[in-house]
Image (cartoon, rainbow, N blue to C red; front, top):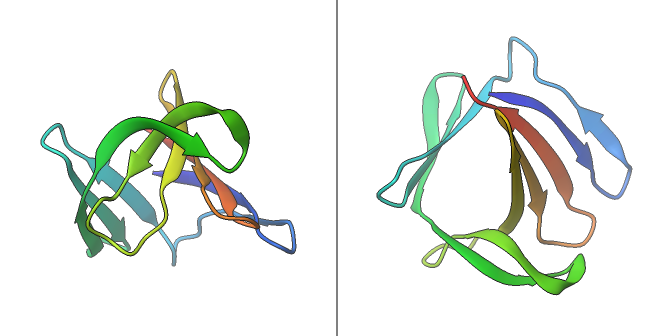
Length: 99
């Protein structure tokens, strides 16, 4: 379940509302789903890798979507929270928590 997204060229903070509920599901077989308001809006395969980031000279843990025209995301997991960074300039940072 998403807590908030921050960033973009305008430095926005976006928090969920009753009208915009988002959930990300990553399973152990490499399947990813984005669910918005109860409907699956994206289904894709993913891989976890250490890869080059636009935010660091070091390799970072990355969620890579090898067969998709979508951006990769660097990530950090702390307790029940998942922190995602869009690997594009002026992208967003997203905070999710485990249900």
